[in-house]
Length: 273
Length: 278
Image (tube, rainbow over all chains, first blue to last red; front, side, top):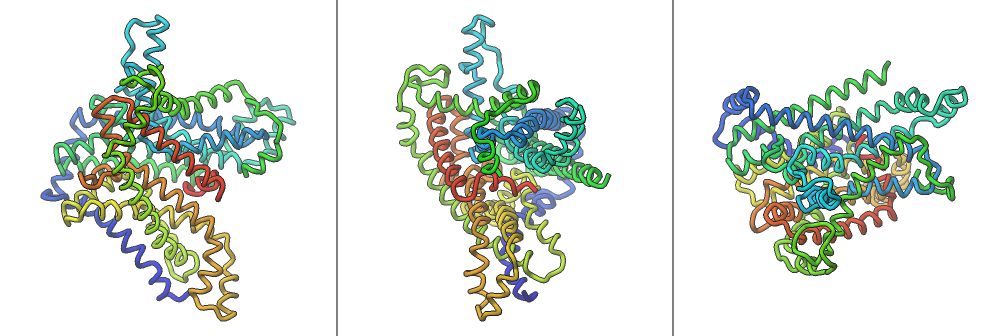
């Protein structure tokens, strides 16, 4: 294919990418309407020293880390059981784990309102059994956000770990077992280290998703448990503070880039050593 | 892959080989699936609050949801947007894939990275940028802005997923067609396009679902005239606490099951999602 026709193939796509993504994203960082770049930087400086704003950043990072850990701890066993199973049910269970990826986040998160709400399943169960007199406040807590985000991102962790485990030769586990290693030992010394690159990818995707998700903290966290995403929306739509919105957007983007960068480095180091 | 395991192990039961791993796996499935089941259960309530167990059985909330014009209008808007954005992303993305895989140009890795970049930046941030720069700055209407944004968001899927199909196709076949006198267009339509079919279906399904369900990118780009379904539902939940959204959610769930069955029958479920993250 000649260079000129190659360029013709690329041009329409490039034009769309520039107008629909790249140019607005860059322009927002440097020149929000009526605000200078210096003011954005100044607002970001204020944000990084203000206890309230720092609290939101820290809550976002903390929830992201907890959700990531839970998704790996729950997702890797599911992936390894399914990848190593000979059962006909494994296919069905894999489909069941992937299906939520197709389903709207709003629908999935809404389920927790039914489960955790004041007239919800857990509250009714606890009061009905006489364990507590009044249903505990479960909604609009950090726990609710964590549960909602784990539900949202566990399928992603399962499918990413699944392809990692599927690439590990089952003969290696069998050899370890044949040489007398216990099931637990062969899991920790063979399967986990050999699937580690996949686990790192899964963790990165889950973390990036958790710290940028909007639906879950909005519905399950309310205004008392603000995260960067809900705060960003409030700056952009309620108070219309462009400098603060851009500054929050920069903090959020840098957070995601930082973690993706670190994980890429870890992945490369893991591949060469 | 799934099919293979399925046939090999027909008849054998799934054993949870390790008690700890088994418990964790069960807990994972409970968190993923059980809340969705409760949504369906509460949708059939005859009562007027979102409580469980439901107070009596009825279909009245389904009737309410279907008759509620903000929802029905939003369904039409979301379908319109998802179909157009997916089609546009494929029409723009397939030539890009061809250029990257078949063209003789420098910097292919960089180019591919550029087209995948919308996946890396938080969607809420992109939404803010489009709202500020295109809707407020350039006075574009919100449908055009949404279409631009959704198309850019789906371009990575179109480029990467069809690229995976193209990488498996032998370029010699196209050259043979050209050598036998076919025009470049004819060679593309008769030889390359059929090889791209599974990738096109996967990218199309993924793109459609991604656009239809999107919240963060669309959130700031809503107006009274054109609102998308997930954002409309989100606003409704925040205002009132009745089971109508449970009914609407159940209908969305039913539609999603249909999409999943189509996906499984055409290209296979696991394949669609296997390729996008790597």
